[in-house]
Length: 88
Image 1 (cartoon, rainbow, N blue to C red):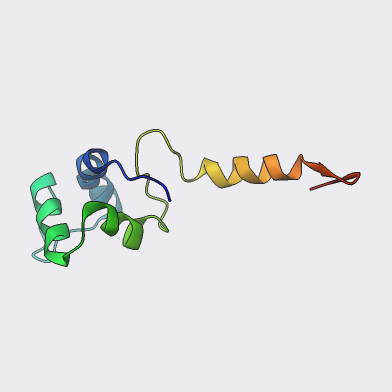
Image 2 (cartoon, one colour):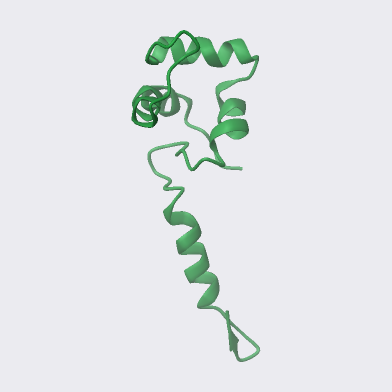
């Protein structure tokens, strides 16, 4: 499982939500504090919240992993493999 950098996830959250036009239940733009509170109110940890809601949405868990480039790189690598004279 991809490790979620909790600090990065929380710090980058408000910009992600603003870009997507998402607001809290009261219509306010998310800030780090409101994001933390919203996650706590779900009863999940930050990592559980990421795994449940955002991993599939292509949201980076840390600044070093590009969720959009990883599948492309993996596919390219698999296609370059040779097995019994055949390539991917």
